[in-house]
Image 1 (cartoon, rainbow, N blue to C red):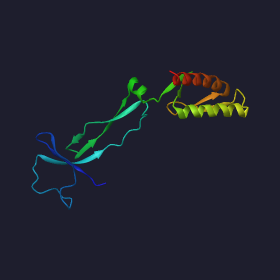
Image 2 (cartoon, rainbow, N blue to C red):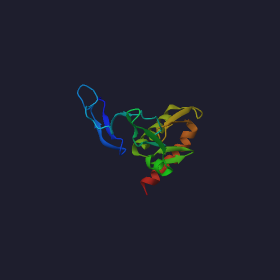
Image 3 (cartoon, helix red, strand yellow):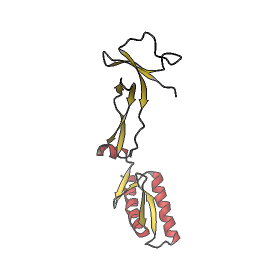
Image 4 (tube, rainbow, N blue to C red):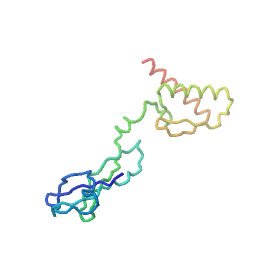
Length: 162
């Protein structure tokens, strides 16, 4: 991607133009450019890593540095409020600390898993894994899964008939 420049007015501390290519074809400083104008190379900082379930990313105000010759776009990671987290969490029911998704596909998957466990003859102490509403793998014993899936099924049934 071609380098872009901001034309910055040092008298008024304001941007005259942004997102411009270098103003001369040969890359030399423009002849006759006013002394109060500076060409700043536009730089974008790398986006920081963050957990989108608990945080959001916002652009910072562009930092203009005439001495360094840069106009830098930075980022800030901001914690979501509990209301924003709740808004982003799929429909679910919490059972023993695990948020079980209640959409139709999840209901069908848990139903199939219950049938599989019943038919396979797994021991009550064997471990199984499910994905919670945040797609995090949770481990349960077969006995715990069977107890919790019954609560889950009753919840989904009551939601369907309400």
